[in-house]
Length: 353
Image 1 (tube, rainbow, N blue to C red):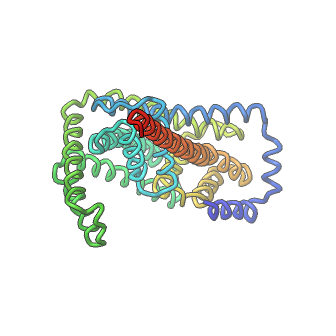
Image 2 (image 1 turned 180 degrees about the horizontal axis):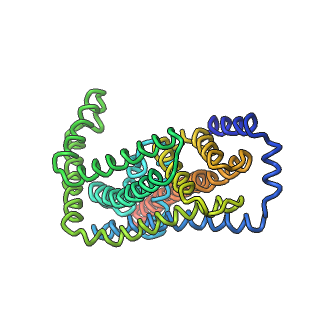
Image 3 (image 1 turned 60 degrees about the vertical axis):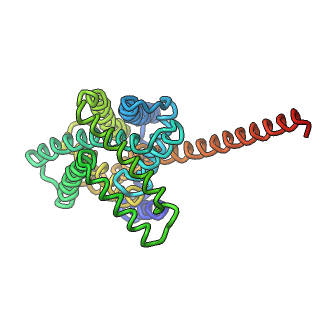
């Protein structure tokens, strides 16, 4: 992240100029800027809230009880993991699965079924939006070749991602093959703790519950309607973040193609490369802004502000939440230990020891 920031700052210094950037900043209406920036932050929070609502609805269908407050915290931790670790959401889902399993004392297989179902719904919405956006761009706008290639790769990746998730959810053999491969790797490295017979048995029990949960959603598609509505709302709210942030510096919603390109390009690169997008994505977006006729200084400032909301704000909040959850776990653990010690002392007193 630090290296990426240095690269972007160096780009602004050598190719744009800090003097021109200071002129742009000095001409910003601070009151209007503060209002639009606040609205953008609210849109981010509402977007994540609807993501959480979709996920929690699915958890409720499988009788996995987690409070809305904890679900919000756990989902943000997973989102933080996705932003800092490239992996197409795998790390985020694993983090959420662990936290919910620890909180609700539920089997990881059932939790995983909800996570996969939620991701299928979410990526179906994203793939549909990207498909419509690409068709519009190809029919109305001339794009730089590198932008078109990135968007096409993102579309292919989204389709493959949904296909793989559907295969995992609907195929009895798919997850077993993955588990078998993992056990082979663990056995090759002689990691006995996770490759023992007991670990294998627990894993296959979780896989059984995963398939039961997946079959429940496939046989009851109506249970996916509400999560689909939540994901669609989140999708449109995520677009408003870009509208608010670009409006802070005087961009007008006159070039629909421009907003579509910025939104999908930023999302595609950020999802694919996570923390490694820092620096490279900012430079690419700045060049796109310039391609559409905006001044380089204005483009650089706009991109920096946009990324402050779409990337840095979730990362900072996610890091804080992780510290809070860690501290809370330590306090809970210490309280349990103190209670156990107290009960032991009371028992010793009653026995006259």
